[in-house]
Length: 283
Image 1 (tube, one colour):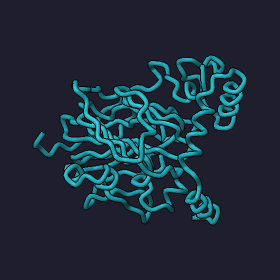
Image 2 (cartoon, helix red, strand yellow; image 1 turned 120 degrees about the vertical axis):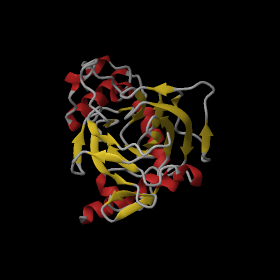
Image 3 (cartoon, rainbow, N blue to C red; image 1 turned 120 degrees about the horizontal axis):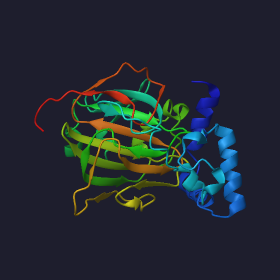
Image 4 (cartoon, helix red, strand yellow; image 1 turned 45 degrees about the vertical axis):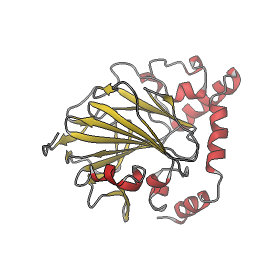
């Protein structure tokens, strides 16, 4: 790690993460034409955003910056592959086995599935011996999150926390980063067993939404478990949520995934194949 990366990580500790993120959220939701058009055009230029794939390619047509940031893509922009799919555009930062209930955050850093999933021991035990994969969404990426496999929602758990940046520099230095940040844990039952989709908040991420409940974060400072009266079943490749500004998705699978030979750090597209599920029975 370079000195600048370490300094960047250390400087985040005293910052008022939530206040900065909520303030950013207000700007991102502003519908003043001059403000929102200026922000959108500057963002496209700064991050080289490809608008040719957007369902609405005209930057000035969006009502707010948030509408632009969570823009839909053309129907044929992300063809679906086979097996377990990438849930989002981004960097496949880490993946592998859940060894002794631990996930790899970065080289030399691990964290526990139990902490990531909100501290529930019984829930974490469902994923022992399974697999995980982490996809980091950079500012230029498409920010809707889709299902890597067909599943029925069992419950949703809001877990309060900090809002550190989740870029690689911070992941290399801040211990247990993804299990420290505010996050939304969505537990699905699939034909291959339980699957957890963890949407991790980050610095200046103003909110996380799901397709079944709308905007969820920010909530209070207490963990909240939510179940819904009617079954919510989402097909593989269907949208399940979105970030209002960038972040990370951590997937946990109860069964092992035979991951494709994709080097960590590779850019992946939503819908691209990450591997095939090894079915171990019982579901």
